[in-house]
Image 1 (tube, one colour):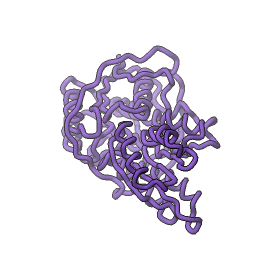
Image 2 (spheres, helix red, strand yellow):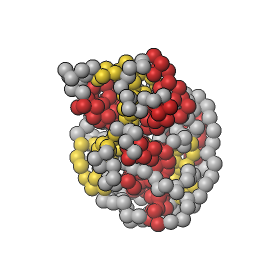
Image 3 (cartoon, helix red, strand yellow):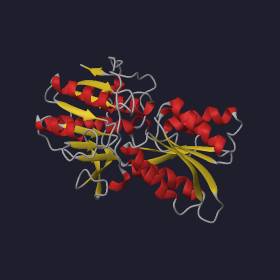
Length: 362
């Protein structure tokens, strides 16, 4: 991902998380490694060269470190999968974990306040799924000044003071989605109209995904007739798709967030458009998984979300214990469609069916 594929999100206020307990079971202790990842060097620049390695975490933590984790929200199954990875790895390593969520991408001030509370209560390390690409930089600098490691997970931040990153290029996620449909409609094959729904305006991952998607379709017969931004709540995305269908009844694809894809299934069915309009997501969730299996969603790239959560916790432990660590790690990306939906590594991308939102590991 090039630096131009990232941007900041200005935001305001929100809500604190409740406490839950991880259900007992063998899932948390499963051996998930070695796992194929890419390592950026120099780190923190998506344009840097990469190498592929098999990631192997430490066997156990030397002590029960207290790790604070901050998410933008827990409104969809994508963040549930990250939560599962965080919780499972915390239990496997034997560390404490407290997770807070800000309630949505408009609540930057809430996220900052929640993280500040974690520091005050004495957390040993902070893992952040950032609401804003630039908006947490002063906070990160202050935390690092106290000697507390800060790990950037999933969304990306521009801070040079970060201790490590566990994330992929959302520019490449968007590119892979665009590339998939561009191959179906090469230049000269006949114009195809697409509604494109990249997610919350200004969020770093959204701007990256949009740039990647647009780049991938540039030399094809894909025509984006509408680009609509919005929060990744189902009602918001559903309204955006409804508005686009009213303005452009001749579109042939709905492409966007996983929430967009999931919401579009019922909408298109109710309007008798399921056979006329194809759906694609540019990231992967259980709803997208089911949609692909049922032939309702064409395809989606996966960033192995569970693994990103696991690696972030391992990075925090390694840094706290002065052990060697990779500073910038992300699972290798690939697309899931009808050809591999029954054979891919489900546990690397999705939480178990019985997993509930979990905010504390003791």
